[in-house]
Image (cartoon, rainbow, N blue to C red; front, top):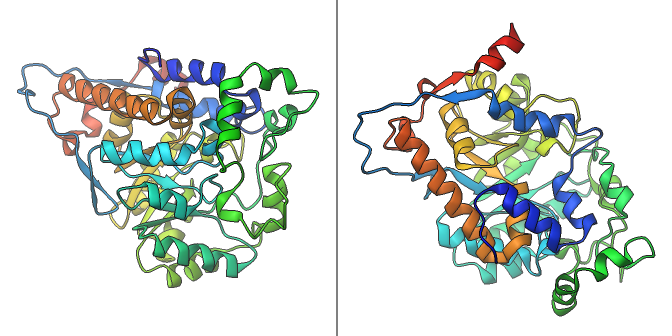
Length: 387
């Protein structure tokens, strides 16, 4: 595994190592990818205030997330198909998170099942779930997450229908991957990836076994979503989950104040300000841009996390300074996973930790709690654009 000094380094290596359809699944967004780009630009609107002559010889990066200790204000986000970015990818991801001392959240649409990942993990992990038409299947997933000692359930509410992601149908993304005339050369150019996929038994959606039909896979993710995800769900469905989940419940996909308030009223212990990484409603604002108003509305009542656009330790510092308790990373995690498996993810986490630590020192902060809006200023380009 080569040297990696930025998220872009991991991204470039991932592009080289895995098939285009898999890479674009992580890399892309919905429609024209305007919101995907907005997530990135939102961080660029903020500059740091450099603070000197402060004793920052000893800095603490640890915090609590969902009332649990974490070595960093960082969570590995729930990402579908991680096991296709690297064979047994979710196992590599959870082990990297365990070693780093940060939370790992497993997706319903993971390749390795809840039970497989739990056997491989030294620590309980968070679990993410969608609202299904079949509430019995929802209950089954809840029961399995409880049996696996998952301390946190992350309920994703912004995928009642799937956003139109143009890259996936263009690339002919299938699960498990299939060799076609269109993608044959692309797959054959990556024999190491292909051989690793042949060597593992985990190539389809592990949590959906028994619910796809005998011997069936999915030609597209939208096939499963269209038939199983509940587009009619309301906040009553969230209350239904709350009544059945006795541990910490976090609602993911909140972008409006009224929805944040509704989530709290429905019993959420936390919310994640998220536009699904720009993969759902194109034209929605950046997550970072709506964070302040949501914090004003509910920040004193619930824990607020954020995802979307985080690509460095400096981005973590900015998000926390603006009020987020912690951040989730999805795309960057998948790049690192594809680039180097567990070692790649560990390297990414260490890179972010080092960047966060240096940024704290140069802004005069010795602990995560000292990351406040006072360490930031709007840059002149952002101020001009707003004026």
